[in-house]
Amino acid sequence: MADHIAAGTARVAPDAAIARVPVADGGDGTVDAALAAGFTRVAVRAHGPAGALVDTAFAVRDGVAVIEMAGVSGLRLLSADRLDALRASPFGVGEVICAAMRTERTTLRGRCYRTFLHVRGIWSATVQPPACD
Image (tube, rainbow, N blue to C red; front, side, top):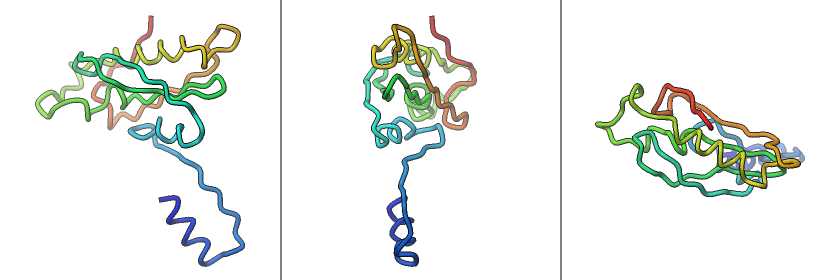
């Protein structure tokens, strides 16, 4: 979409300075936006909302981790007959948080520097907060 807006703006204001910056609303695509902004993808397996292992990822750069709740606990990971927010588990989100905190690319002097968890309730399969031990 940014390319279309930039093209339209350039047609009516050819001298305008245009900067395209990837953004996301906290749901699906948040990690992809971070990757487009120069972050590095880190793959991880974690428990999905129904308890099965799912492949997901977070993004890291300069001691910062970006985690997308929808990537491990999102509605798209459940079949229509499993949509039950009270029974779905956010456990895997905690697993991804732990993985991000433990990866050396997000540490500063051996400690987690910054981790951003992007939560967008409408796309999450659970209403419970994640945990990390």
